[in-house]
Picture 1 (cartoon, rainbow, N blue to C red):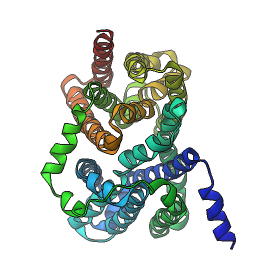
Picture 2 (picture 1 turned 120 degrees about the horizontal axis):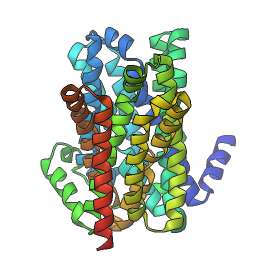
Picture 3 (picture 1 turned 90 degrees about the vertical axis):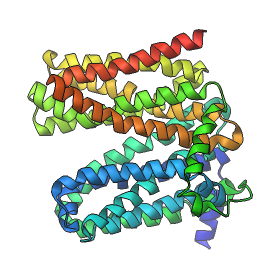
Length: 409
């Protein structure tokens, strides 16, 4: 009786509250699980029978899994509904962790593919749910709160995973993470009826579509459904390049350029992550007040580039400047995603929200892969992390200014 009453109270929540609670929970737990993998890198690779450097292959295969889901997962979402698709993603992530932890050699990398595929539905399914339920005047803020689950999950992983491994060992840690995924599937089940109640007629061939190149082509074509979508997609890819470089290289930069200890580098990155979580919420609120999210993103691109430039110059001014500029860079250059997702969902035709956000996120994810590769080449060529940061920031500023000119015309 108590459980039934609890479910009834859950279902009596305002629709937008149910939507935000469900998507934020899944976003946070998915980020927690996926970001736990690199933290568990050495013992996980040793147990799987792979060289320690294979953690790079795990990251690559996870990226491939996310791209696969974004490219071909639309029919699956249409068939099962958004909440059920999120539950399938959680189950795939749990299964991927289990496979990756086994002594299967290279075959264990299939677990990383499953983890990526499980993380992939958060963008299209979450956008579909929130677009239907969020009040228009607060839509960007609500999207941004949901996207704040990414740095929140990463922060929780950083605080929990390593101490748990030291205290209880790898096996207990893995099963704890898997258990959290499975419990979350049950936690969001009461939200399925109110949030998936408007499902379409379904896609019986959704499983075959996962291997269909035609589905990928059709998804990308949807980006022509509104004149703003190509510009939004390009801005998202540019921001993704900047964000991925900041997350991948900031710690190494402050250690090599400013002689910071590894512990201090970790604190600087933690400050950056925390500021990005605040930035996603605050900038979502600002975008709602301004009322023109695309113009907001164009200005934010230029401001973000300036913040990264200050970060490059901050080390010579002392630790306080380094921490302050890291926070500013996190707030602006990593706090863009919620505004971007909300604007994509707003301009997309209602029946194409999940397809448009999937396709735009796919291009953004390509940017997050290409950004660190280009950054590495720039450092190899110039020997300077600072110059590489400035050049990547320059492409973001250029894209922001070009977008502003386009909007004026």
